[in-house]
Image (tube, rainbow, N blue to C red):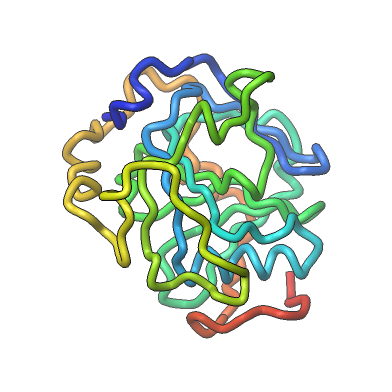
Length: 219
């Protein structure tokens, strides 16, 4: 169910919020299932679009963390919007209209039991206030290296297992995520991101795959 490097992780509830604090969630299980670095064009395009509209800066490589799909909205539901990059896109990204933070991402590959967070695009409660999350929940893999946006700068060195650097996705051990992931959540305390998304306005941006977003777009 979890990558082995997170077996001893603190599972206490963690807070997720947008950068201005207008939206706050609480996730029921504070232990990540997986953490990866992703160089794909869609992650970059979404984060660039959010940034030019006033959101956080685009990281050179986004860090993606995956958590149990069980959460509670504590405030700011009226400030949320679901964004789809294009008509045939699969990933639904939940953003805050107040500061263009990206708060939750859903994709069919998550099997309904996980959601994804962009670590640099929202505020996630630290595991230890004295130690960076990059140390307490390090990325286990780097994927889609072939999609790296070279205008971002030099590709930084990966600090994890060098055998887990991949030009594309999905490597064999990622294919096992579904088999290692329970089909249902045990003892949920809140709601799923899919349930929340049904109550939130949705827009389809119609962006061309891989095209840079260099000026503000409709929100």
